[in-house]
Image 1 (cartoon, one colour):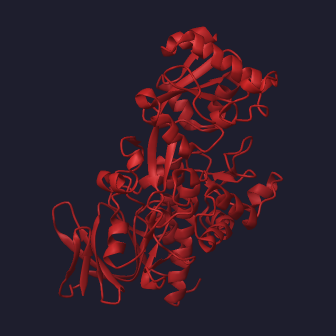
Image 2: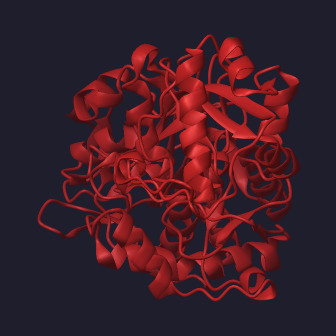
Image 3: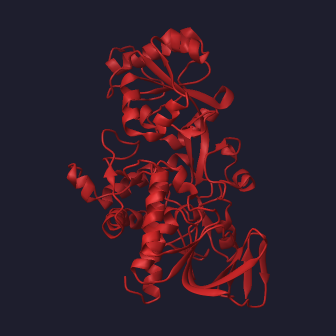
Length: 479
């Protein structure tokens, strides 16, 4: 028997397992909890092993928005969507850089997964209306009523408790036990006092996200974001990747990640990108725009941290301020914290932000002129390629919030197939090991610009369910 730990792999004598369970799940975020709910419904006993005192993870830090296609909530508001359209949007954004079979499996599972969570576990969803995130052809972002990641994880946790799922918290897994064929036999849990627990399992699901909280791995795989703020969960230490490598598993797209170019500084909180897609602009310390803000918020992280001082100001108007106040609880919290500035002219805004007055006035004038369709001189058309014509012109009073670029979570990880099985380098599947969400290779290709809004929660929810359904079928359970 081998013990595969983050420190390395060693041959050991078989331990005596303190307990055994058909399926063990490492990680209590959206991926792990959806997997556990699925297994419980299929009458397969499982245990969720969570390193923290409460199940939160990256899900609690996210916006909580899940893209899904063909749902009844979309139909209720007249939105026509399909697996083909969602798959096409994902692949267009990543320039066809991901596995098509995994993309289609995720897209196909998205709508049924949310409807099952609603029907079987009472989790309500609604579609966000009134705007589209970059790259999405139709309205398909689904959210619980709280419209936050904390609200989503809270509802999933409550559902797991009602279903009788065993969740062991403060239980960091420090190693996996496997035979020579790579079959997982169990896991080792190291408690805070140094004591060890050994839990045997017939299948293992890795739902412990990526490596964003491990500075050494970030510098190794994505050095361009290594000096940015990390807005993800500190527990994302890359354990899944290192365990997988120890089992001779394959990894892919390790240079991919979800960044965000609208992370309030110094407040450390997400500012909705809808402010940009609906007409807002970003300016740097020189009072100038520096890129096309209608592109994705992930690649925005690189553009923002490339500016002097690694910051920018989001500038928008009363219409957009009211829009954010009505629909985004995180934004209202920033208002209460004093992060939002207000001014009744371009010059007073520039003075408040300590920016060059002339530059801010010119920047706002040009943006407004493009929004009104008044610029006819080709030399004045936006040099960054943004189409300003579809949104109303910004007008006083103006609002602004200081932001920086941040790393949210990594998108590279263990290579998996459409059933979420971890693959070896030769393409064969390890016998009973699954991975989902940030632990697995994502659907964003190999670069930051391949991330389509919501890809993280989309794969977490769907691959948690896909892995659990496959494991249950292999174990001969009712599915």
